[in-house]
Image 1 (tube, rainbow over the protein chains, first blue to last red):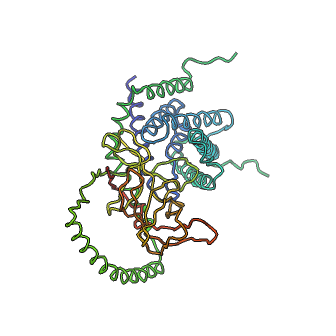
Image 2 (cartoon, rainbow over the protein chains, first blue to last red):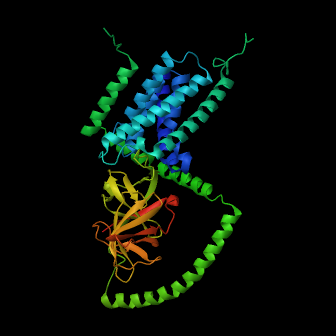
Image 3 (tube, rainbow over the protein chains, first blue to last red):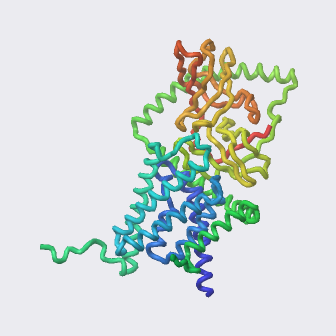
Length: 180
Length: 270
């Protein structure tokens, strides 16, 4: 019981720290560095390697803190991250058959794409509707490209670290046994 | 029939999210939100400063050729500035005398509030050129939309567009859509409206064709906007676009400072 509460408290502090880092530090970095999306990276990491319940606790508090800090409408990050987590969960459960680097990478790519699309749609629906839809703008796809690159790098990094620490995620690449 | 488990995490998340939004709308959790915002202020300001420092260091990686070109340019600038300086000193002394005679107290006319920049807004807007900044002062400190925001050097960098009790969102004058009522320091004291261009420069439009504008003219606020006093420096004219068949002409204005290095700003309350 106390162990569970302790884990939740640690997750809350972790979410708070990550949200402040994302909001203040990452946003102030130059160019492509400002496109690092810690929320999505860590959400997929927790979903892939830990339990779905931990993912929900993380996105709930991370989204809540981001909603407090930002000037978007309250619930913007909670809704976006919740929808991405649901899609990532369904994909990992129904389509991805193993815990390989490929699966991890695919999950990162789809989640990043879905996150940006949902965020753009929500921002468009809550704006004055006269400013246009950012999806039709080059800068949207440029930012998305940078995010995908960062997330793939994060996927490779996290996966390699985890394979060093735990054996359950091997084999790293598909085996070539039985090949003529 | 679809069975929904009572302890389904998705169901719990949706219910809690709905409840949270409801509690936010009716204002019950506002004190908790304010407490978190207040507690995170120093950390946010420090993290933003580190990020900006990293950005400056990254931008300063230049080649030898670029540095030599810049040295040559700066030498020319120093020469022309020295000539201008003597001219301005003369005007300044004359101005002092006149102010003394008129009993004009301009410096203490308005109150200024100092604020730290804590983030750049991730706006998900149409153009990534629109990157507003968020400062750690809000309605509690007397701020409201349309107030002017100055850099440490006293150059206007933008205006407040949105506030909450703790923080405010500021649009930069180089961001498209951030408009200011401006006046050129030429013979005609031409008035117009400035608007950001690509997040890099400023455009001043609606200038009548008959008005004479020269490259190098300074642009200041005209005071017609309401919340922003007149005479605050916006930038310098770097290009003039004038077509004989058009009713209006426009000028491109270059800001005098680099907005990416800002960490502290002041807000003028008239």
